[in-house]
Amino acid sequence: MTQDIYSEDMLDKYYRMRDKQKRKPKPSKPIREAKPEAKPEAKLESKPSESKRKDLVDQLIGIKAVWVLRNGLKIEAILIETSTYELILQTQNGRMLVYKHALDYVIY
Image (tube, rainbow, N blue to C red; front, side):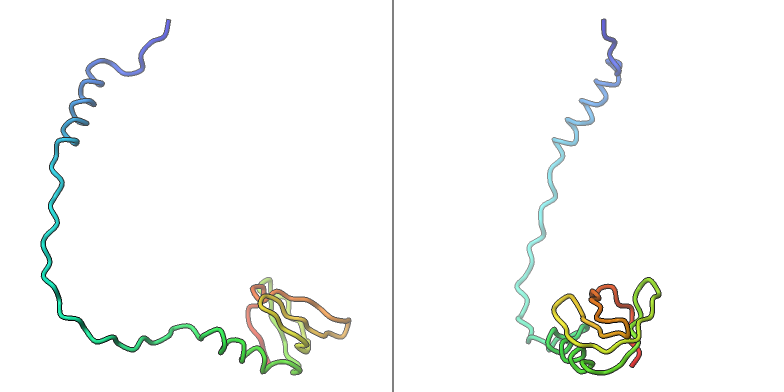
């Protein structure tokens, strides 16, 4: 034999509360007057565009720099090649693939 978790009084209160909420009229939306069209303003870009970012990375190809990763590792290397997500660096020990999102900053 199972026992009900909620008493009849609690259920009655719940159903009355639920019915009151259903009966509440929704607030009507105010009628807005048509605003005169404003001239489009020039938007300032907060982030450099993709082409500008590519130019910055491409300027470092062939230059010896210190690449600091997010984990604190410092790599002294020459940038050989870039792609959308990776950099190929030439170090004293050979070539190294580094993901761009792993970079913290570059000292050159």
